[in-house]
Image 1 (cartoon, rainbow, N blue to C red):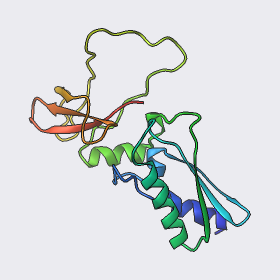
Image 2 (spheres, rainbow, N blue to C red; image 1 turned 180 degrees about the horizontal axis):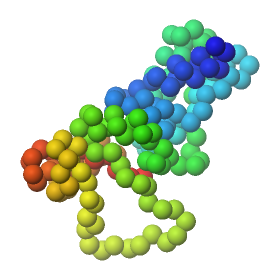
Image 3 (cartoon, helix red, strand yellow; image 1 turned 90 degrees about the vertical axis):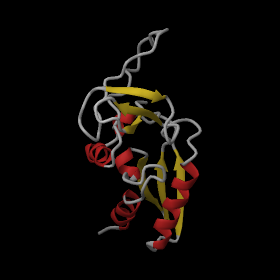
Amino acid sequence: MTVLERAAAVAAEVRDPEMPMLTLADLGVLRDVRVEGDVVVASITPTYSGCPAMATMRDDLVHRLTDAGFARVEVRVVLEPAWSSDWITEHGRAALRDAGLSPPGPAPTVGGPIPLLLGPTRRVLTCPLCGSDRTERVSEFGSTACKALYRCTDCREPFDHVKEI
């Protein structure tokens, strides 16, 4: 295994601090790992502007890579293109469901005008606990800013929904 392959494998195992059932790779936040001379460079993209977990992600990447024997590690934040919930892998979506979280649907289409909606919009979500599509939004903000709180009207259980971005 090459130095690059080993570094990429270690970086791909780092978990998201807010959703630990996901690796940064499954979340689509880990954008690139390369070796530049004797420095391992990992590139990450925040899920949204001002994401409070970015410093922890950076620190976790540095610690895991240095613990694996890489003496010099640099983490770069890449803002373009902006992260999209479409970058969550199928494995990541399954891990979210298995943890009782509703994974995001397709991200809104970019490129055209965004329609102005004056009334509330209804997302059709499936309850990750019982599978019912009879759900209602309780709050636009859940346990973290990137999640909304929903409740299933059949099983009555609350659940977080990872927002489409």
